[in-house]
Length: 65
Image (tube, rainbow, N blue to C red; front, top):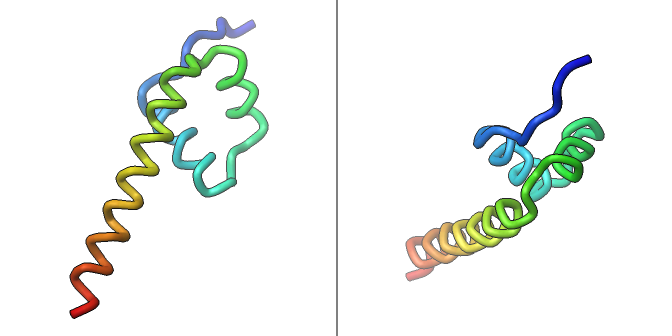
């Protein structure tokens, strides 16, 4: 049996992106809820949201005269 452990940085990142777009696999979701640190997901989600809003604001600022 494979030993379960905390997700890696890349697994956290991919899970946050997949959750943002709503395409998370069941296996990744179970891993995240079982072994993941909620603070990492909360911080990552907030950071992703702020970055996304910043990019949208920048695009609008550059397009609208």
